Length: 176
Image (cartoon, rainbow, N blue to C red):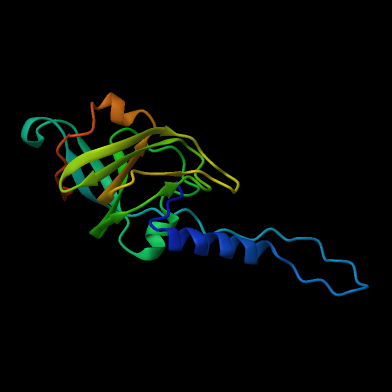
């Protein structure tokens, strides 16, 4: 899944894409054939956080990769296969801020869960892939301090709705 945490990052990505695809030509010479630009491999971050559902966190736990750096936020789940059940990626924001996410180069549909002050404030369910620009952006108008991306349909299957408490803790379950 491709995410962008801020309009500035979105603009930078569009500019970068434009720069990568622009080629210089010399008058009178044929333009060289366009060479596809290699893409870095999809990122895979450690499963070092979890969100346990149910009363007092006694239900199933969603293991989360955490995007901490600007580059990790930008790459998100780009070029990754569909997420398995009970897996996701957390995008924390401090301080809380308005964000919009998109699905550029994200081949599998996702659910985007927007969080503020330990509570789900909005869900964009079953967001479709967007392999080529332009791509639609998703997110609430207000500020959030986190976004959790899950495989499409997981928010409904797990009963996640606006108003639900969100408590992210270090992962205690072994990855696998």
